[in-house]
Amino acid sequence: MSYIAIPISSLPGKQDIEIDVTINGQKQALHYRVELFYWGDCRVPTFDRVECIQQLLADYDRDWTLYYIGSPTDEFVPITFVRREDLVKQRQLLRAR
Image (tube, rainbow, N blue to C red; front, top):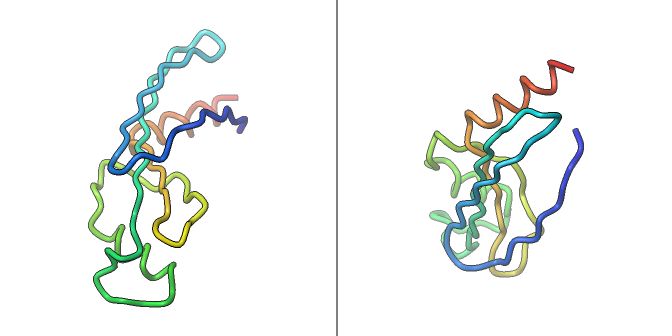
């Protein structure tokens, strides 16, 4: 899969991103969400950051699926989600090649 990088500023809270693209004449709407998860929000304090991320995402909205985990800082980790139905569309386009 090819990638196009679009810089998104790291603002607090959720950033819902909608992208309309046309690839080889096929229009497609893609929906992403970037959210900052703060280490201090872990329910059970732990030194294992992977365990913390698992805790933070355990009850996340099921309409969205994990797409990318960004570079963590000492305070937070940015995580990108894609709408689950959009991920299915992307996979179908890849198989159609």
